[in-house]
Length: 231
Image (cartoon, rainbow, N blue to C red):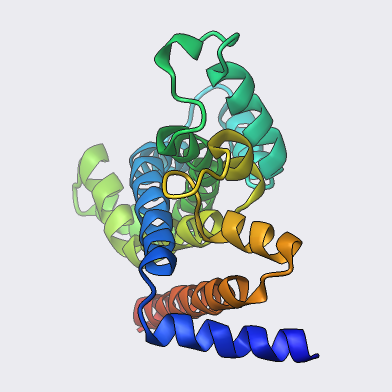
């Protein structure tokens, strides 16, 4: 208990004193996850919307695939990216392994299916009356699609925030492809795992507090957006 208690005291001290190393890890984590969710949004949002709006061969299979990939095991994603980017892999010549870029790639693979699947579900769940009313008023197919997107915009933003929340708490994939290199690829989750294994609880608890705060902010945003959408 004394070790844990002293760890809490050290954690509070690090947070209050704005420890350079600690806040560097936090900043790097947010940059990597932020970049990943931006890319995943550009990939997943159109994919989910198109899958929800358009009828085409294989649509149901694609929707099922997206829902399946929502639960991709991070370590499997990390292993796959590692095999592709490693020296002996097909993209080994790019020297991306054990870099922040490799971590972004792994997180994009994790976040894209989540954003796409939730976007698809959102568009499909829109009341058919909206589509029928727009068609009755003489709207074109593109105008109908835009109307549906407008009606579901709050839920679409929710899907992006959910994807961001998923990757900020991820440890397996980024640890495999990033290597947890101090000052370069060491992020909050991998630092917590490392410091806990060393019995150094101060930094681990401090970063744990930050992750909880981030989770609280994400859920607060989700709640506010849903509430606004209902109104």
